[in-house]
Length: 396
Image (tube, rainbow, N blue to C red):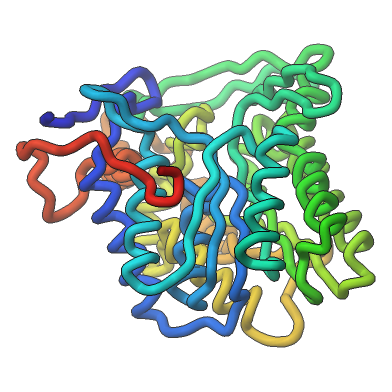
C-alpha cells in the first residue's frame, strides 16, 4: 500500500515502516560516528520505542555494544492499517541490533501493570541475569494504578490562575493567543500519579527484590525545566509538580540502592519535537524560535545527538557524574545558555503569523514532527508501495 501521513490535530494517524527503518539507521550511524562509549552492557529501557527512550536504546546498543531489553506499549499493524510509529521503530532497531550480533528483545504492553513488570523480570532473569542501567522514559497520558485500579489522567494546566500567551498551529503557521484554565481539585494529584516518580520506584523496587540489579547499577529518568516563557504552564503547572515528584524520587531510589552502590539520576533534557511536546500549547512556538537560534549558534541537537552527549559527556565521562545543586544532570545546558534565551525572548515578542517563517524555524519543527512517524526522511520514495505488516522479531 502507499502510505501517506493522515493528520488529526497534533497526531499523525499513520506511520511509515521504511521511513522508521531509515531513521533508525541514521541514528545508529550517528552514534557509531562518535566513537565507543565505555558504558553499561546490560540495559533495560522502559519506554523504549520513541523519543529519548528510543535514542537511549540505540546509544546503549551501538555506542556501548550493550544487550538491551525494551518495554513499550505500541499498536501492531493490521492488513491495510499501519502500526504505530514506535512499533516500526522497534522492529527496525531489533533487526539492526541482530545484524550487529547484539542481544535485543522487546516487551509490548502496559509498563504500569504488574503483569508487564513480571514479564520483564522473568526475561532479565532468563537471558541477562542482571542489568546495570535502567532508563525510565515513559510518556503516557494515563495510568491505571496497579494497586488501587484507579485510572489517573494527567493534565497540562497552570496552578492558581489562567495562563494566556502565544502559541502556533505548526501545520498552518498561524500564531494566536491561547488561554488555559487553571487546575481544579484532583488535577495535580492525578498528574503526579501518572508522570511522577511512583512507577519508576516500583520498577526499581521490583528489580532489586529479585536481585536483578548489578552492583553499581544506575537508573536515569528524563525531565524538562524550560524557560520562563513556558514556566507558568509547564514547570510551575501540574506537569511541573509531577517533575518535582520525579526528581525527589531519584534521591529515594538512590537511598534504596546504597547496599549495591547504585545511583538514580534525573536528566534534564532539551526541548525537542516529540508527540507529547506537540500537544502542549506554547511549546511549538518556543521550539521553532529556539531551533532557529541554536542552529545559527551551531549548538542545535536532535534527540539522538542529545542522548549520545548525555552518555559520553555525563553518565560515562568519569568516576563522578556532574550534577547541579539539586542533584540533576543538566544536558539542557546549551538550550538554557543566557545568550540563547535572551534571543528567544526577544523573538517571542515579535512573533506573528506573517513573520514566523522568517524569524523562526517552523519548517524544521514540521520536518522533525513528520520524521517521528517515518515521513519526510531524506532519500526515500514515498510513492512506492510499502508493506505495513512488519513484525518485531522477539514478539513473534
